[in-house]
Image (cartoon, rainbow, N blue to C red; front, side, top):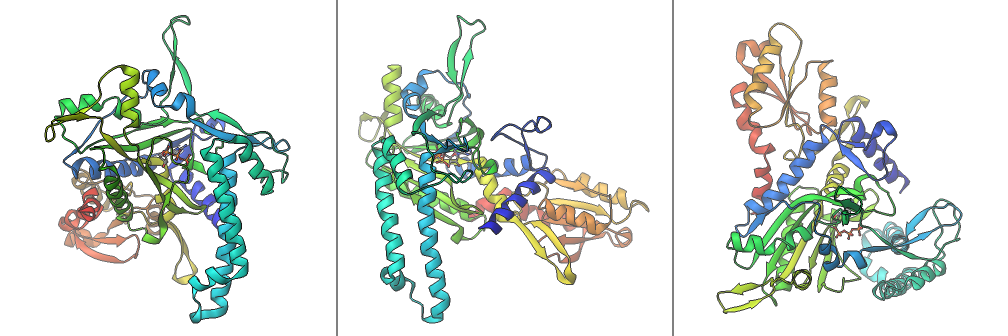
Length: 514
Ligand code: ATP
């Protein structure tokens, strides 16, 4: 575990050192849970967004995009339930004065039981070797059964407390489980209180004329309030979807884990409108489609899992998370929710407008049901970084830090490196950049030894480098180096585009989805 934390720290500093992610307002020592993306980060982030956008809007004839404003009419948030119920249960430790989310403290405790069980399993696996039967061990070993029983009991109690919105019971669970504050190590806890996560601000130039509005805490509502506009102007027939990428804001209580939990972040959401009664079938389909999107990146199926929700929001009839194996455990990257007709009905009620669909096949009007897929760009970015970061031991005792980014997501696709800064080599290199820059992102670099330049490119995950040497002037060939294998081969300059373009394009990923 400690080792994993070390790796995570290294990833965070790598992000800063190589221009991926900086703390916000860094010269003023940063702002809690707010980050800026640097010159490489913005490219990687844009590529992630493009991969998502194209997989939705290009690959589905019945999905279109919108870009709604961050500010919305304040009644939106009454209708959606955010004003009354977008709360987190928070608890303070009186000794450390640190604030925690009560539900997260209990979830961490559940994870501890899982870890204990896993440890027993691993110990037994070592002891029994090939003869080990995990299933049998889990169902018969006394210690495992004891942990499992405690875990299940806690899980049941926790789910019930959440569903009943019982804050006293949440506190009691924390006391009964003897959960301590990680900072002070004490159990001196305050009451549990609800805390609304929406940021408020005011529109209007004079104080009297001003009215309170919110920074949107999710992009979804911008889609719901535009349902009629898009359906009518786009002549959309059910089932159809509306996709959107945009900023969202939440006043998160606990700022932890770098860009995993931010106060200003970006979401990629798609609301898929379907005929009532077909929603669970579509829910299953979207689960599979979204999992395939993640897995096409090649990070290994074992690093993903579905986590079905214990507490369904009152309007949802199914919900799951796609979790990714981060250095700090399996964590939610995306949520997939079957939201019934709750949002559209609420907006109809609060706006007084009829928000329905006329079904030409059955000649009836009804309020569509909705399946939502909602993924955080920044969490996706973090999962890509965590999986790609690698410290490699090389032959001869050397080490290198390499980001094994999927080539289609890499910020820079090709580095063009003249071996020396003279004899006409820079001119040839610059010409290659001038020709190829229309097709993918190229970077010219002539500073330092070639070895150092390779390392710099490895550290930002650049999949290809070409070196221009004196032979190039005679044979019009360059040395092409592969980031992952470090293999080098001679190729004609004229072939570079054909060799590289396919591998580094978003299309190469999209093709895996069909
Ligand atoms: P969590 O339980 O971690 O707070 P959530 O269940 O509230 O997340 P949703 O409301 O389902 O999250 O939002 C959809 C997605 O938006 C999440 O899967 C996540 O990727 C992203 N997201 C939500 N909150 C944040 C945040 N504070 N910082 C970064 N990404 C976020």
